[in-house]
Image (cartoon, rainbow, N blue to C red; front, side):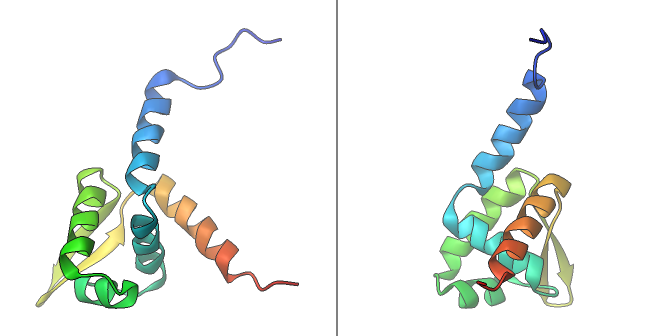
Length: 103
């Protein structure tokens, strides 16, 4: 057996923090919507998820604090995108998996 450590502790801690931030079902749904929609704003997100605007804003704030999403102001709207490559790839896998039709 190899004596090497499988993953560096610093990297594991970083990934654990990201996964904890996205681990809530509403946050995962938000990320899937952000990945699928073109220029999604907060009102689009809370309407799609049928959640009160403050709930969605609170979840978006957690994702922003952890560097998962970023927001850009476009005219009168704040538009969200996935800023973290690791999470973007993870969400792309989730979206791809949910788009598969049963055989």
